[in-house]
Length: 288
Image (tube, rainbow, N blue to C red):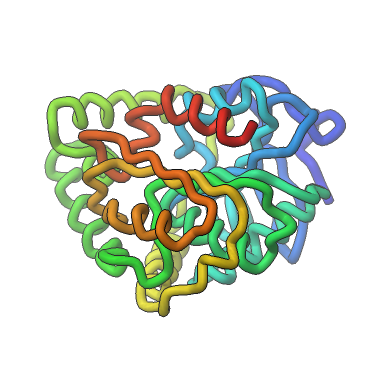
């Protein structure tokens, strides 16, 4: 195991804008990660979305949860500053995430998972139930879920629209094109730019394509038996999610034995970013 220079006793204080990036070696990979918040208590591990690196997490969500909980975010294999080749299946991504969690010596974690990260979290909960305590699944859906197979086409389409409009693609992918949605999207993108130094590497094109391939495979898989996931789950989405249609969140609620659902109004895939204050408060209550 290795850690970035200057990091003391495996823990870093600070805010999302300033916290150092560290590394840990496991399974032939140098995983890049950041952690902040109280050193005591069960850690909250964040699992992120398609094409995302460390700097794509909303600072208001990370800092908000880290106000009372130890938060750990990381780049999975081949993403951002982490080494290795990005897998083309969600199952392999889940194995890599477990390798990272265990490399930090963690015995049990809570999880906040968004979009693709939510696919990964479901596999972890099914295969490694004792590693997980509680799970937040945001903007995600089950294997074989409705509309998930359209994510690659929709992503490329919105990337083109964003290029024409000279805007960030996330403003199209994550937020509705309503006045309120556009304002929320612009504010979210500005927050992502708050960290000025020691930013993460952008995702590479091969890694992006590998993730898209994994999503397409997830979309074609038969539905898994989510009744085996006995953990408390908070499923969150916007009422107009174009990427992973909202009915997938409702499907998760029907199939998970212990699931609470929150659907935010007039919002899309990035509802947790549009309503970040409420999401943080709900998540902290759920974990406590």
